[in-house]
Length: 381
Figure 1 (cartoon, rainbow, N blue to C red):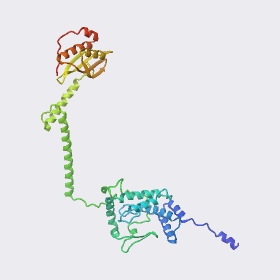
Figure 2 (figure 1 turned 90 degrees about the vertical axis):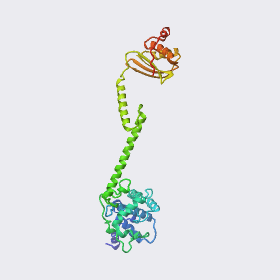
Figure 3 (figure 1 turned 90 degrees about the horizontal axis):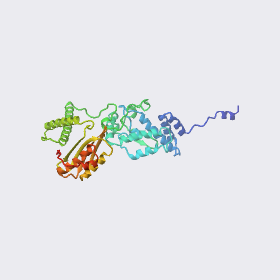
Figure 4 (figure 1 turned 135 degrees about the horizontal axis):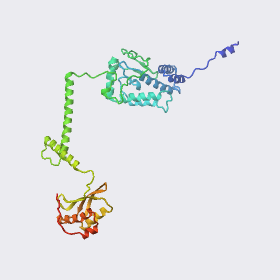
């Protein structure tokens, strides 16, 4: 075999580009491996290349998802890591906007870019609120000790983190290579509040003593009793405006009058017939001592043209109906009319004579022929 042939047999396919290798590993969620490749590639480069922007996008995805899958010793999520911010440091809007731009799905086509963007949005929504951030810092400070007092230096060109002397490494607090198969309980359930800040039972507030607990319970009971009295007094005030014959305003009198009035209304309802009476009847009286306005109530057999005859009868005595309430059930008609133009008892007598013939079933012409005088018993209210 010639040397040339042997050389051709020893040839291997060229390696994939580093960015393509990162894409392949990213699909398998090998975030640590991808980040290692990116850091090595950046150290070996002497000048900036066109694919550096893509490396920054991939590195942002890896950093956020690694932080999202890890847990701190007390079970809390690393929300600072999910927005690539210094722990216990300020959370700046401009840094979050830069991170959001790197993860924008319009420009970032790598796997899990949308998931990383969602994690960053969640972390920002919590840490951007000072009260929630203060509680979170207090919770994690118990596990990092002096880490909160020592600054970390970040070298942007090499993407390396240097820990100052005397600072405990993060690896002592949690294992960065261990991935939880389940995401565990959520740090914040829905919209986080300070009372539901810690999902693992960790409490920052000092437990209340028995005396303080009793005082709080007594105050709650007092407030509940005050609200109950306000509701009762409001109901009594409503009853005082409804009851028609209330004399005394005390609560005992109001309750007694309420019971009496209720029984009276109940009896009135029982006395009301379900259907109009089978007997023809007619009743007239003045309304509220108004000598010009009369109330007419009559019941008779229903027939065609009944209301026309009633209108002609009122017209004959120069009266006018201003309101009518009519009910027809089972071939019977009951009607309540409010008639204007009735001049005292004399006008009421004429109107009753005219309507009585209609109620008894006689026509209006017969009513004119039989319009004789007579005395009628007038009911006045």
